[in-house]
Image 1: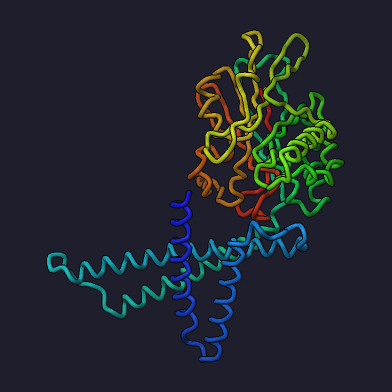
Image 2: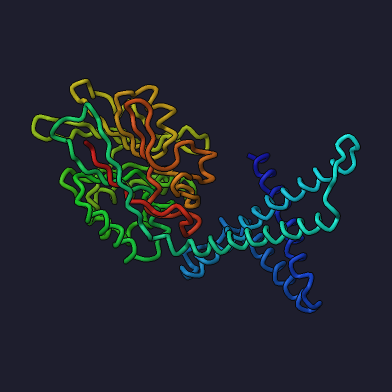
Length: 413
């Protein structure tokens, strides 16, 4: 952990160094007074960003006006990411310089080389490109806060040979990662719930992280989420944030009381919380199973509270079709596929698609894919499927850039 932090700090410091060079170069033609004013302003913004970076966990965000908080966080993240992108472009220029030097100074490799003027011109071009790329990143993260409630409905049709006849055509709606403590607009959240209900789902699944840390965060939204109804019911499970593991509690009893309050809130909203257990859904003579477990992650930084063996106990071959709700998608490869091949469909969330990435025809990318191989959308191995929802809410960065909040509609055929 310490080594990873040291690497991150080194990269940020290097990015800061190159960003200073790029900005100084960009204003070199300004009058002396204007040049000094711009550099002082830039240094002040940089100090502001660094202070924000180190004080992030110590700021009482709840006491800040929501819009100020959103712009503050978006600016800080965008400023840092922008500088890292400047670093990438400038390292490309450094590599170009190194290759040019080798070709120029090693006789056996000598060949006609660009003039000094051409080299300077390329460096200036790359510096300007770096500045533009960094500026676009900063502007993009600020613009991304306007997308935090722009829910996108994603539709999937899945065919299963062992799906009982009575359940063919069943429409599932999945939402995940509400993170109610991040919300600041009741009417926008209500619109998302209305979009869910407009789909007329047969059943609704919620796959964890109702809150950021504390049960009181969701209480102002209980009436809104209580509107989620479906003929076959609303089923939910817990995510890693629901346990209150990331905040300090005055006592172990206080933490336990908070979790019990959160569990009760699921029930108050009409949601059936599945805690390492299963329920059977019946239509006529046909039955399928819905299993739900507590958080279980293959990643060392996240807890393993779930017990799939316990949830699966008692399900024999007479229940041909099984759906699992498991918050963390790393669970699928680590345990579900290997030990429970009879689980047909697993629904997860957790990653949020990092709330930042690119999803266009032919290209699907987010930095989170370097941590989670299965990070958004549908995955298949043999007869088993995993769907990773991109999240209904947001956490940390109060926006969405390229990865919109998601309402998943799955039709079983």
